[in-house]
Image (cartoon, rainbow, N blue to C red; front, side, top):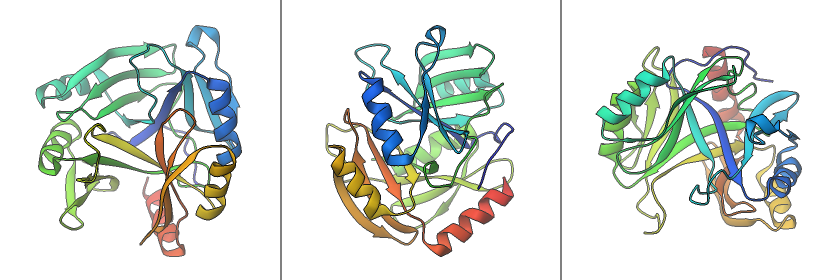
Length: 266
């Protein structure tokens, strides 16, 4: 079981969370889908609820703090200095939505949009390092940026996180971490995005079996937007209880071996 007990290297996706109007309903949905133990957060933390898999932190859900905040899974990237990351975002043409702030000893965070409007955050770990479990059924396995401007996105994230890239075809690149060249995320030229859907970071959760997970989603009144096969395994795009979109993927044996290699490299 791949786990981590220390801060993630800078530039690595290290956390995801999502806000809801009905946190109880959302918690029930994800507990049944992923087997999460959703632990309600204290009032002084605004009800921020950590979601655990095998006793380790996998994600979080939180009450909506303002009406304009969308229900969407947000990707956070590890930072050694969130204040410096915020300055890098501004310099690269992005915007700072939430200025750097300390979170009760857990760490330090900020939230941004990139030059195209895709939202993402930065997390500088303190007592909370981010993912305590990953690439395991019921945890996050991958994060992709869905963009209409591939070259612009490459330039932006290269400036902010020092990413370099491997071309995987005309419409997809993988992002390599500055410190050691490890592949940590992807950027997809998504011309199929509806006009009303902004550029966004898409979270992929690992599941043991795509079809069984799809059946659970349908039983829980979620919506399966599409199911498809990839070189890495069967995958599906899901719309959750308040409209949030995410993917589930069941790794093939080869993809699992490659993920195991990546775990060893962390």
